[in-house]
Image 1: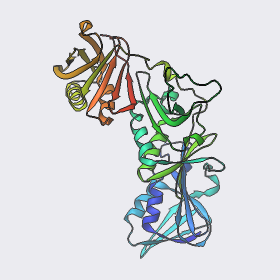
Image 2 (image 1 turned 45 degrees about the vertical axis):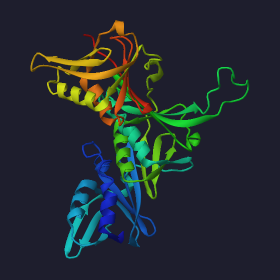
Image 3 (image 1 turned 180 degrees about the horizontal axis):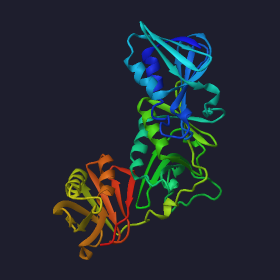
Length: 394
C-alpha cells in the first residue's frame, strides 16, 4: 500500500471511528480501524461487533493494499503532525509508515484478513430523512433507556412504523365496508427503564417503504453513535437489513446491530387511555422549581412530592440527611373534580427534569388519575411527544 492523502481528510475519517472502536475488549483487533485502498480513494472501517462504520475518502493511490491500525494512537498523532499532505506506506508485515515533511513515524498494525466483516447495504430500500428530525427523536427518548445491562431489552430504543388515519370519518359517516382508510406513516421511538416511558413520533414522507411494522430494537451505544453521525449531516438515508439498521450520508455509512432475540414490553398497555385530571403548567417554572428542590437529593433520597391543587402545585422534598424544601408553582386545571383535591403524588425528581428539559413549549400538560397511578407529561404544542412516569408510594 502506498498513497498520498490530505491530512484533514484522513483525520476526519479516522475521527469517526473513535466512538466505535472497542478499547477495553478482549479482542485487540476491535481497537483498530481498517485502512484499505479502493481505486482513487481509501476506505476506513471500524466495528465493535455492535456498531460499525465505513467511509470512503479521496486519496492519490499509488499501490493498493490493506491493514489495520490502533485508532486512538493513530488519530492523536495525525492531529499533531505538520503539513497538509501525508504519505502512507504499508509493509508486508502490516506496519504503516507515515511521512509528513521531515517527520517519519511507523505504526505496528494487524493483518487486514483478521478484521471482522463490516455490514454492507445490498438490496435494502433506502428512505431519505432529515437528520435533525431523527436526532431530535433519539435525544428526546435516550435518557429513559435502562442502564442495567442485565435487562438488555430495556437498554435499547424501540423503533416502529405506525399508520395514522389521514381523515377520521364523521360519526354519521361510518367507514365503508371493504374500503381501507387512507393513512400517513409515522416513525415512532419508545424507551423505558421500567419506571418511566418516553414516546415520540414524527411523520416520514417515504416511510411507507420502510418495513418496520413489527418494530426493531437498537441498543443504547448504537443510538449514541447514530446521534454523532446525524449531527454531521443534513440528510441521511435509512435502510433496514435482517441484522442491522443502516444510515447512509454520501459515501459514509454507519450500521448498528439489531436486538433480534429480545422483545420490547407492550408499551401500549403502559399508557393510560384516559385521565381524570389535566393541568397546564409553565414549563420553565416547573423545571426550575424541581431542579432547585433536587439539589438537596442524595443517591438514597431523590423523591419529590407534588401536592396538586386547582390553581397551584406545591413541590416539597425532605431528606433526613440534608434538609427539606418547599416551593409553589401556579397552574391551570383544565379537567377534573376540584373538590377531590388536594392530591399528593411522589416522584423521582430526574424523571420529571429530563423530559421537561428537552420539551420546547412554554406550557406543559400534566395528566393524572390517582396518586398510585402513572402520570403523563406532554409538551403542549407537541402532542406527539409524551413521558409516562410511575409514582412511588408515600
